[in-house]
Length: 247
Image 1 (cartoon, rainbow, N blue to C red):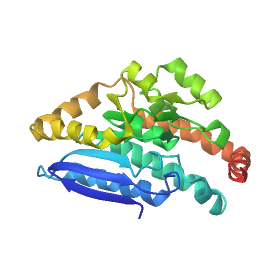
Image 2 (image 1 turned 180 degrees about the horizontal axis):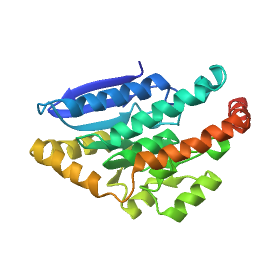
Image 3 (image 1 turned 30 degrees about the vertical axis):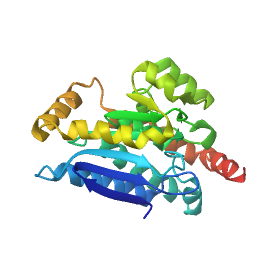
Image 4 (image 1 turned 90 degrees about the horizontal axis):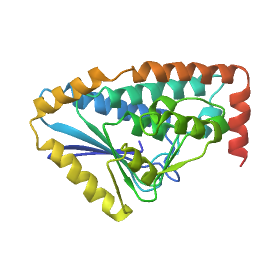
């Protein structure tokens, strides 16, 4: 298991630690989803807020493409699709707030994580992008559109161009941009500010915000995943992933 958990003073910290680039494998995606769901189901105030961060090998490089290609037939893409759906849905529909702490690259499923979260705090060298077209897939544009304006999201999806943390800060989707060495303290301070509030009221506040969002994030993402599988059936996904691995 390459995800580490600590719980202290109402704050659950989940740290992704999968060198060299923190690619997200199927097992870890399910593990994080299950942990977040378990916090939501607790009746006590043991956990009031979740911090989701990385070990410093970049926040997340996307799904583990090697894992997908090593599995037979369509098994890899189906498992990646399902585990990512469960993870992003668990984050967004968590009864307690989730803070994404982004250091370095945040790509592919990293965008799904950050775009599902309630709050994003990033380092000054963090970059955000969806290289899905180059990797023969589609998905997480729904989540990217919670981070950048629609036309910017379209450009990023078509070109695989990244955006900086400072850009996202200017859009208001990143709460704070700090130097990497300040990221841990800054994110913990933010988590503790939430954890210091009445837990029942915070859960009610989150439920009210989730209820007034204009569109259903999980349904939008599911539509994108349908196109990913269509490209896979056409053989375009395999070709793109093999070319990526050959690099």
